[in-house]
Length: 108
View 1 (cartoon, rainbow, N blue to C red):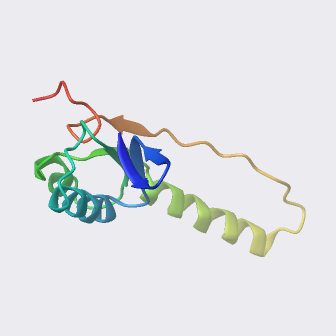
View 2: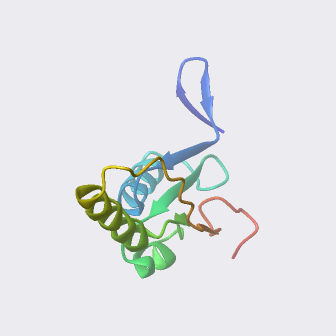
């Protein structure tokens, strides 16, 4: 567990993008922390997947279907422009957790 400041311990950092996760990992390693032994890193996978896969340590990501979500947003906006009677819609998308070294000390 990493000590961030007096009395505060953190066991994992969640990053809004895999690019931020790589920078976070670099900073922790530069300051003597071991990933994932001292602190884990998990990110939203929204960049080039090979960069997270082959970074050392490889970064665990949650893949979100951004292209599908943006296409659906466009469809909903278009539908709303031509129809006044649309109601609330709940739309769910499948996500995928790809566990890699940054959160799993047993992975080689």
